Length: 245
Length: 245
DNA sequence: TAGTGGTCTAGACCACTTT
DNA sequence: AAGTGGTCTAGACCACTAA
Image (cartoon, rainbow over all chains, first blue to last red; front, side):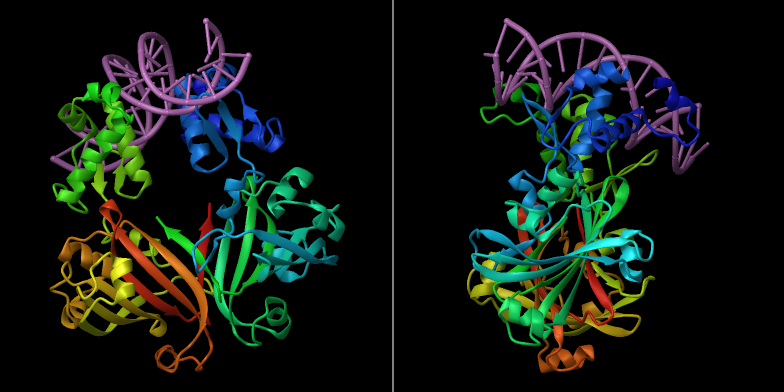
């Protein structure tokens, strides 16, 4: 292992090579979400490097929210089942402080073929199978978000309205445990639009009133796009919070 | 220095103590934006710790965008004069790809007294002096954002419309070089609103059309709020891009 | 060639959790 | 007491920049 550093023509430090080896373990499912990976010293022996080098690799992965370190216990694979992961992808906060209970109400779920845009965004071929989900998100039993979610049909073939209705917990935690797809990062494109009649009715606002249009593309390991969604957010009693570091 | 680790009742590791010492150097102006701080080995001698400990302190500060490392050259104090820092706080992207030139057109600048909300947000007393700036932001000579910016009068006392008009470059780089105030992080609260007549005219959109309302509070060292602004973004030809890590 | 940050190692010890 | 991650050190060497 050590030799690769010196010989590699496009130089990549040892700890990054270790990092990608650990990443392989995550992708292959050797260690599943919520489980512990081997200790630093075990990995150091396994990869034949010093503990400090493994440590630096894990440091980076923890900074990327792929792993979670717990002193005295071990290092764990990050999971969307962890309630702390929930607000990482949903940045909606009530105008009047406090914490609210949110519930997801699936409305429809049907099969379709990818059009030009869906194919481009999800990196599919035109006409490939996709699954579309429509959903209403409620905070304290009041509708706040209407979502339309596009998923590659091949990966999510078992998905149906019944499965969605039976599931307690976040959508991403369903995807993770049931379909083995873990969302790692996402890009959101936000605009202001006027409510169409249908959405206005679902959200309980006036036709044509301003809504936040949030278009999201989510990626799994290797920057593969696996979800495309468009949400309309009612910002009458909530706002989208963004922290600029 | 070493002794503090063991003796400290609320344990704080050595490298964090070093970090806060370096932070003091930044706050006090010992090292100014754009300048280099001493080398790791110099700092190690000065603080009487090992180079690795200084390194870990600097690592964290680099991750927080306070310092910028340049291999072979040194470690530099981050500056808003650096063009790379520009898009850290302005997340607007044209719908049709490509890069645009942006220009800031200051409209008005006047003195006022802090009302309840401004006082709360900026942590001032009711009636304290504040300065208000109105500004139009253009991309490729087309208006996209109207901003209203509230600043503590004491800190920004020399600010005027003339100063703003004479300045070439970003607002934050003006604040940094002319007033010694460096913005480190910010929170944005985003909602969708209907355009009022005045803003609609400035932005060249129809009265009542949906706009993004972006309310921002910016903080300097020690999490002190030093700017409050509300911007109305026209998202006819642009969107707000957010990366969810 | 000298100085800077970047990587890697080996070993000691501390803080936290579990048995 | 044993095992985990967390801190700190000292030293060697590599990669990059500038004189």
